[in-house]
Image 1 (cartoon, rainbow, N blue to C red):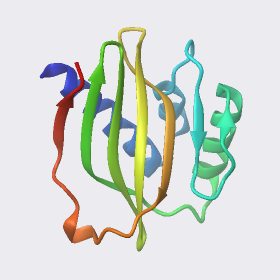
Image 2: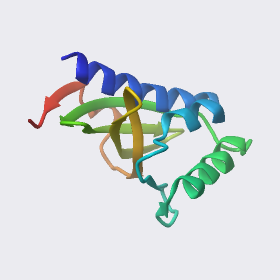
Image 3: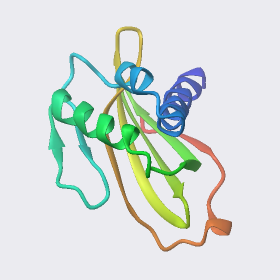
Image 4: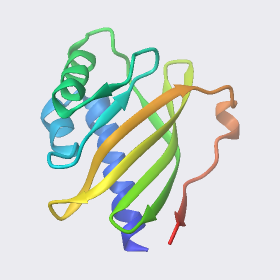
Amino acid sequence: MQEHADILFANEAFYLAFQMKDMAAMEDLWARDASVACTHPGWPSLSGREQVMQSWAAILSNPDTGGIGMRGARAHRYGDAAFVTCYELIGESLLAATNVFVREGGGWKLVHHQAGPCNLPPADLPEEEESRLQ
């Protein structure tokens, strides 16, 4: 189950970089060799590392960007690919999110992040779970 712990750790590192507005950490978390994409709530889908990193630079440098919390992370792994489903708490907003990772350079690196509105009450959020696809 160490693999799941490593995937959940990478996911938590992503949210910590977001919360701390740490662009250097955010850059390190995203894959450099694999293709990347991102769909922020209300944004068009972005493709390519340059576009994705520019979007994070804009978000993290915006003084109006509030704090973020993450709950209910569930890791799913299939070989050298994995995804985490979780919930993001941004102010009073609850978003359902999916973060996709690949093994690159000896660790798990993000290749896709997508989040969108969710109407589940925060009190009903699930606890963390680990799931293995195969």
